[in-house]
Image 1: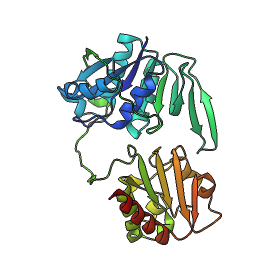
Image 2: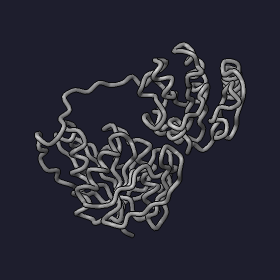
Image 3: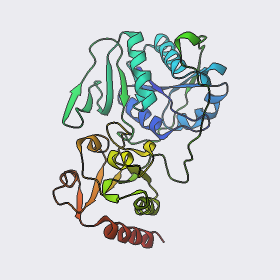
Length: 319
């Protein structure tokens, strides 16, 4: 079968769930080849988990500079891998970094770029939700090797054990004048909750939460369900919750198994970031709130009465 290259998203020690989703998507087109960009030794630490999820080859692009420059080493590695194996497609996770890597790679290859795919068939046709969620379209690249960024959560990770071929990519020296150098790193405390884009359950709060203290109700329900906490833009702009937890067109895009919206009206900006969630539950005291039309289950009521009861019931059932 033809090769399909997948850029591995990782923290140096662990592969992010979005990469396993990409490997599952890649199998629809051919044999997944994982491209690992990092410092020396990174690929060796990640190969076992990549093989377990179906990577038939692992391309190690390692150098000391890989951790010193922003994005350029990943673009270089993918370009080298494309020249080496001539894949039928390149898949990248549609994160903030992933979208830029995909765009720069497509420009270098003079190839078509498809962004934020939520479905992919065996012929290379992708489904996208565009214009803030107003339309669903099907697209296909007609020039060059398709470069596709895939929305996290759009595909289910699958264990598909393989015995990958090991390949080495010799990264070129990065031109400091043409690349952004990383001068400092600052870790954001993650706590015990899963990452927002990787969580199978997300509980989000909006302006209806009423203030920063109101998010305690959101957090308690998320913790009871073992999920992540999100926030609508209105809540973030009002200072109720940190920006990195914003879900929406200008925040993060999520597609969990369960999405619970508390006090969120459902502006199109927010819907664009969560409408592909498998099951949506909305709690809002306004019976005309747009999100109630999108939700699979709607509760018209006070979130401060509904959410604690739900938390209590979930906790009781899990004991």
